[in-house]
Length: 402
Image (cartoon, rainbow, N blue to C red):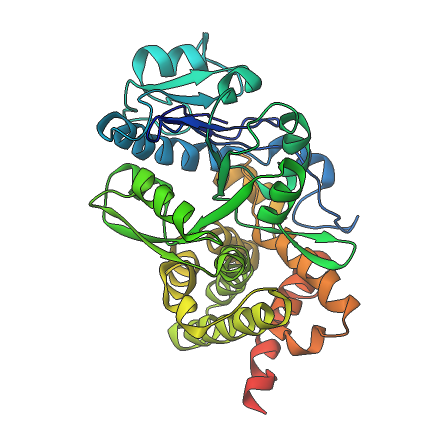
């Protein structure tokens, strides 16, 4: 994880990027920015064919390292140019040894995350700090970029050490279960740390963001002033941001699209063709909208699903994401997901399967699984040994067609 410190009007910010273990972040005057991650293990079925609980504990972070570094590049560059932000961005980094040298030393001397985002220079004002509390001290803005299963322990470490007037933004795509059902990751952070939270979701493949290829993204906020501050901190000519006041809907889009992408991968692996894949995307979007209307506490409008966080991110993930790629190989080869993760992703873990399990538990509790056949089929194939060849039935018998 990485923390950035900078200042807004003299406010500071820190960014935290995921380590192979948990960590945290913060914000201060010329605002300081920080981003964080932590460890939280969601409930999973013991016969999970995709991810064992032990594997999830130890290996669920590298993909976010890449994303965290890409965002650090943007935030560091903006902090150096904008007077209202403190120049230094502290990045909390879980210490690793790479080619005989500490990763923090590599980042601070070579200004490159050579392990997770090689070939992309970070601004020299982005400082890698191996101590979580030092990295986040005095920060005004916390940026969370970690797998959603790990956020609980991260917040436990942070809660006594951050500024209470800090604000946070989560780039974490996932949901959790609470005693009353669905629990958004931003809600977990908000409740444990007592800070106001926004979220950022969109069609933002990390390599393309780092290469400064044009893309759009969406900030969902409850406080519009905070949303605008965060937009100013993170927007560039090639990373364009729209701010909407439907934070819950924006956040749910980021989690649910990974489940649909697994279905798209099954479709590709089974050779169903472009027409069928288009149906997977459309029906998946309909289930995303229906789920949001059932479970979001705030407003849910169709226009939000037309933002980058909605249809754009869904399309990108269903054609170019890891969940689609591994699900396709799963359908073609019959290999376990663990095998494919090791072969194709260097041990990185997929978010789609676990999110499908969390959704299933919530829907089953409300007797709603039959209303969400695509979500349910992904769960049953991933966790209940349902043959992947039967995936087509969730499309053929979908209630949208009745």
